[in-house]
Image 1 (tube, rainbow, N blue to C red):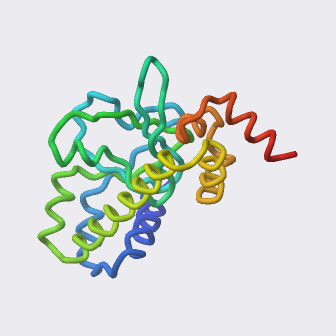
Image 2: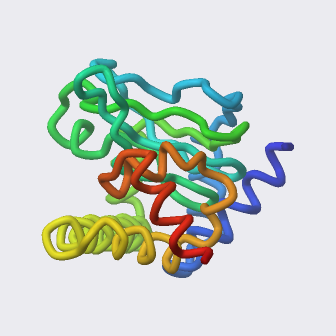
Length: 195
């Protein structure tokens, strides 16, 4: 992936939130660098002092915790989405989870301190930050209510309905941990669904 193509993709994504003046976008891209992660590579690991924000322009990542030596996925990051441990950036603490590439992935990366400075440059950046944070909040609240109110089978069907772009890209064992099931339980649900 070329830097020019990556920049076009991020421009399209950010412009879906608000109009960005050309001078602001030129300044923004001057702060970016491109990073490639091969499948299985980490963007950051739990415990890292991590001060970057990435924007996926091609590929797929997942955030996960380790509990009793098992991975528990808490978020997927695909094209057009930001990748960072945002709460840790806000609190200036080490990353509380891991971020690893499920596919070969290209990201545009910016230092978080540089990104924060954008907020005082132009209101478009504050709008992008607010709307991005609102989107993540809604997704997390929906996920929380599903864990409290729905069965594993219902959670799986909701995942399929909301994420058709991920079904053939994410291994089933990772989907299972995301929706709070053992891989064997998810296999039974899928077998029942296809009958």
